[in-house]
Amino acid sequence: MPRFLHYTVHPLNPQPRLLGHAASVVRAGGVALLPTAAGYLPACRLDDKAATARLARLAGTPERDPPVLLCRDLSQAAVYLRIDDDDFRAIRAGRPGDLAHTLPCTRRVPRRLAAAARGLARLYFAGHTATEALLAQFDEALLLAPAAWGPGPESVDELPPRWQAGIDLAVDAGPLPEPARDAFAPAATDAPIAPDLPAEPGPSASLGRQIACDSP
Image 1 (cartoon, rainbow, N blue to C red):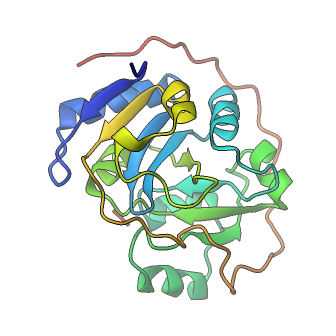
Image 2 (cartoon, one colour):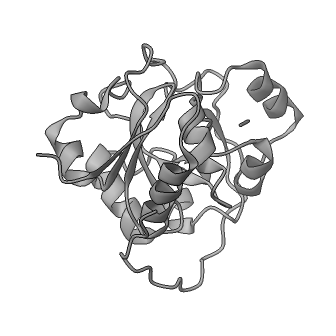
């Protein structure tokens, strides 16, 4: 039997109460499985060192791969990434969830994540109403882990055993359409750019594990 919390939400009108519970789990250091245009994928708080380490082990992400930042909208993305006019037009021309864009980090991205990827990160928008509604409850981007084998599962019922054992929560919006297969494939325009190297962050407050129950 799955050991993770399983919240079933409406795919178009997700229940705010359940999203509030999900947000509490993530804030407390949990790893959550979220519906996206690239399938169900795990995510956690960007600033939580322990959670990001768990996420990397769970997804088998290569250390030097640029981290994927799951952002609510372009205004939030601009806090973490340097977006010039050409980047802005390219992002606006695409559909949310179809493609992740590789961009230079600002100092807001933790150094432990940015330095390994030469100061680069990938911007991704979920392309799913339920996850967009969840992100509206945060004042920060989340760290997303693409599946190492390609698109994520189309259903929570299709999770590999390793993911079932490694996540704390699944936001289940039902079966997804066929996932975007090239959302995280390197694009021809994804060339390295001189990064805005992040500063070493100060000590962060430890987060308890107590969980409260109750678009670009």
